[in-house]
Image 1 (cartoon, rainbow, N blue to C red):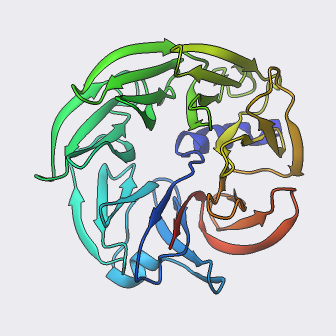
Image 2 (image 1 turned 90 degrees about the vertical axis):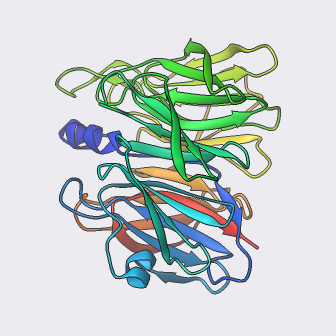
Image 3 (image 1 turned 60 degrees about the vertical axis):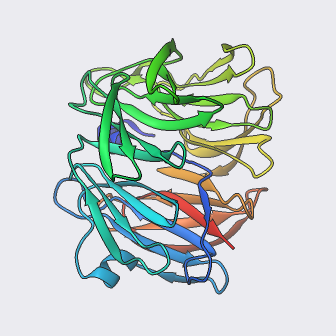
Length: 354
């Protein structure tokens, strides 16, 4: 990333969600085998949109939610999830989550009373966790959402800029990416009691995370800018948390002072990690004892994701942040498959399969 892009990119990355191997089975629907493209829309003065690529016939349809319902999702569309036959659209600036029928995109309801929400994750049949930044300064939290009463029942303060949620065993791991400031924390919650049982200093502004085939949790830390956004005071890093020993047993710092890593994701076998960094896309084997990634695609990417049913890599290009973006797809060797125009500021992907 060049210096004349740093400030704009730093502000934009605040609203980025990172790469997740999300997938959900939807039956008897035109949306049962495809890739949703989450498009944030113009920051502050636009609306997020949701588009869809049908993987069966390769047909791409823009703004499927707006076209179906006749109204806009809101600003900024941060992430989505589907579980128990309900779709959830997390709308950051509008402080809400919009729910819909994933078989036909019909609007169902709105969850209000949130403060800068980021992600929603099902914990069990009774509840889901919603991460939120709160003020964006110091009170990032997990909101406990009762799936039966459809109401918020508890707020768990976890730290500055509560972001992604990963569940393993009886624990939920939450990265705290700093929000409007900085953080080095990953919070650990007991999902049976909804109580924080620990916090780890894991790296500067941890954000995206994945779980590998050995059940280790990898966390991509994006680093911290100086006050003028001209250089990183702390560089990004890739960290491994060992869920057997409950310790950090890999910590790989990165070196570039002008680029933040984003979009940590894995292949379907959960043996290879991918991320975007310093003008390209990189891969890294989970067994490596040193950070020796391979850059196999050149380009600037706002985010990347791997389709867990095909191992096809999807990349988001936001162009100038105000006009339509571009999605490019690559195979596992970095060969370009195709590309297609999407809505404004594509930022993430959600995959479905039969």
